[in-house]
Image 1: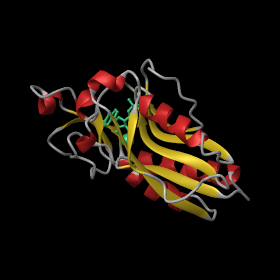
Image 2: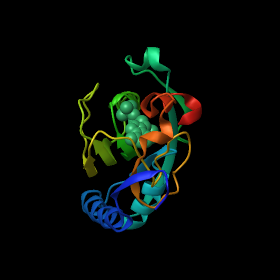
Image 3: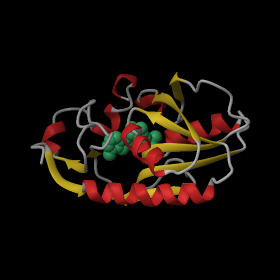
Length: 193
Ligand code: IMP
Ligand code: MG
């Protein structure tokens, strides 16, 4: 185990089993539909790569990169688009693939913006859902795991851009970020996303 990890919350085998299960559900639900998996960069990359291979349907994959503005505007949930989709989505059933929902602000903004582009449908699939009070409520259609309100890394999730390559989801030792801004605020800067 990586020395900075206090505890493995979700081991690799459990992640893979859950991804297979979600893939089956999505395969059933989207048969005959023009499906676009919309991954959010960078955290959702390992998840979408595994999930796409567990879905037995023709589908497209595209990515968006978004960053919240700094702390002062965080409560307004204004999000800046760093990379947009390549094309229109009005003929597509869009499934947003997220790594984690925390406050709900990022996704709330994203959903709002995508709805205005008139997709045939718009649903949300998140690997992790933090058990905390949301700033914005989000309707989650597919969820991997509900997790405690701790800062986690691995399988795409980072702290200061590191640990994304860990094959499991782990709880970061607080000593790693002690004396630094809290990770929850650090990842709000565009460079950290
Ligand atoms: P929200 O707008 O607060 O829901 O923020 C969601 C984003 O914050 C995620 O896509 C992650 O990039 C980041 N995030 C939230 N919690 C964690 C965590 O525990 N570890 C790593 N990144 C996190
Ligand atoms: Mg993310």
